[in-house]
Length: 100
Image (tube, rainbow, N blue to C red; front, side, top):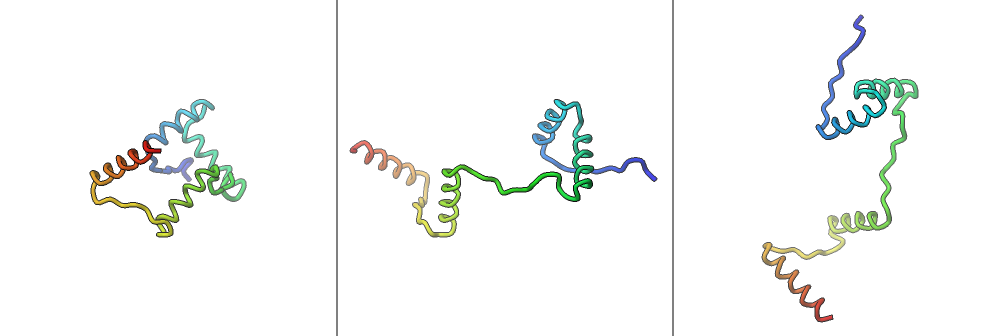
Protein backbone atom coordinates (compact mmCIF):
# COMPACT_ATOMS: atom_id res chain seq x y z
CA UNK A 1 0.00 0.00 0.00
CA UNK A 2 1.35 3.42 -0.98
CA UNK A 3 2.21 5.83 1.77
CA UNK A 4 0.97 8.79 -0.26
CA UNK A 5 -1.29 9.45 -3.22
CA UNK A 6 -1.09 12.27 -5.73
CA UNK A 7 -3.80 14.89 -5.95
CA UNK A 8 -3.62 17.31 -8.86
CA UNK A 9 -5.67 20.51 -8.89
CA UNK A 10 -5.75 23.46 -11.27
CA UNK A 11 -6.01 26.99 -9.92
CA UNK A 12 -5.18 30.38 -11.33
CA UNK A 13 -1.63 31.62 -10.67
CA UNK A 14 -2.74 34.59 -8.55
CA UNK A 15 -4.69 32.35 -6.16
CA UNK A 16 -1.75 29.94 -5.91
CA UNK A 17 0.72 32.72 -5.16
CA UNK A 18 -1.61 34.34 -2.62
CA UNK A 19 -2.20 31.02 -0.87
CA UNK A 20 1.53 30.24 -0.77
CA UNK A 21 2.28 33.63 0.76
CA UNK A 22 -0.55 33.32 3.29
CA UNK A 23 0.31 29.82 4.42
CA UNK A 24 4.03 30.64 4.59
CA UNK A 25 3.12 33.16 7.30
CA UNK A 26 1.90 30.17 9.35
CA UNK A 27 4.94 28.08 8.48
CA UNK A 28 3.01 25.62 6.32
CA UNK A 29 2.84 24.82 2.61
CA UNK A 30 -0.19 24.71 0.34
CA UNK A 31 0.10 20.91 0.50
CA UNK A 32 -0.03 21.07 4.31
CA UNK A 33 -3.09 23.35 4.15
CA UNK A 34 -4.91 21.06 1.70
CA UNK A 35 -4.11 18.06 3.91
CA UNK A 36 -5.49 19.93 6.94
CA UNK A 37 -8.64 20.83 5.00
CA UNK A 38 -9.20 17.23 3.90
CA UNK A 39 -8.59 15.77 7.36
CA UNK A 40 -10.89 18.32 9.00
CA UNK A 41 -13.55 17.56 6.36
CA UNK A 42 -13.37 13.88 7.25
CA UNK A 43 -13.45 14.66 10.96
CA UNK A 44 -16.62 16.79 10.76
CA UNK A 45 -18.24 14.78 7.97
CA UNK A 46 -18.50 17.65 5.52
CA UNK A 47 -16.99 20.99 4.70
CA UNK A 48 -15.15 22.37 7.73
CA UNK A 49 -16.85 25.75 7.40
CA UNK A 50 -20.34 27.11 6.84
CA UNK A 51 -21.35 28.09 3.33
CA UNK A 52 -23.38 31.28 3.06
CA UNK A 53 -24.52 33.55 0.33
CA UNK A 54 -22.44 36.73 0.33
CA UNK A 55 -24.10 39.69 2.03
CA UNK A 56 -23.69 43.15 0.65
CA UNK A 57 -24.47 46.60 1.98
CA UNK A 58 -27.86 48.12 1.12
CA UNK A 59 -26.51 50.20 -1.77
CA UNK A 60 -24.89 47.19 -3.44
CA UNK A 61 -27.99 45.04 -2.93
CA UNK A 62 -30.13 47.79 -4.51
CA UNK A 63 -27.74 47.96 -7.49
CA UNK A 64 -27.95 44.17 -7.91
CA UNK A 65 -31.77 44.31 -7.84
CA UNK A 66 -31.72 47.14 -10.39
CA UNK A 67 -29.38 45.20 -12.69
CA UNK A 68 -31.60 42.12 -12.43
CA UNK A 69 -34.68 44.25 -13.23
CA UNK A 70 -32.91 45.74 -16.27
CA UNK A 71 -31.96 42.28 -17.51
CA UNK A 72 -35.55 41.07 -16.97
CA UNK A 73 -36.91 44.04 -18.97
CA UNK A 74 -38.72 45.56 -15.99
CA UNK A 75 -36.70 48.77 -16.31
CA UNK A 76 -36.17 50.41 -19.70
CA UNK A 77 -32.72 51.80 -20.38
CA UNK A 78 -31.27 53.94 -23.13
CA UNK A 79 -29.45 52.23 -25.95
CA UNK A 80 -27.13 53.66 -28.54
CA UNK A 81 -26.25 52.56 -32.04
CA UNK A 82 -22.76 54.04 -31.85
CA UNK A 83 -20.21 55.42 -29.43
CA UNK A 84 -20.60 58.85 -31.02
CA UNK A 85 -24.34 58.80 -30.25
CA UNK A 86 -23.55 57.91 -26.63
CA UNK A 87 -21.05 60.77 -26.30
CA UNK A 88 -23.49 63.23 -27.86
CA UNK A 89 -26.12 62.22 -25.32
CA UNK A 90 -23.60 62.71 -22.49
CA UNK A 91 -22.79 66.19 -23.79
CA UNK A 92 -26.50 67.04 -23.90
CA UNK A 93 -26.89 65.90 -20.29
CA UNK A 94 -23.91 68.07 -19.29
CA UNK A 95 -25.44 71.07 -21.07
CA UNK A 96 -28.76 70.50 -19.33
CA UNK A 97 -27.13 70.24 -15.89
CA UNK A 98 -25.21 73.50 -16.44
CA UNK A 99 -28.52 75.31 -17.03
CA UNK A 100 -29.72 74.36 -13.54
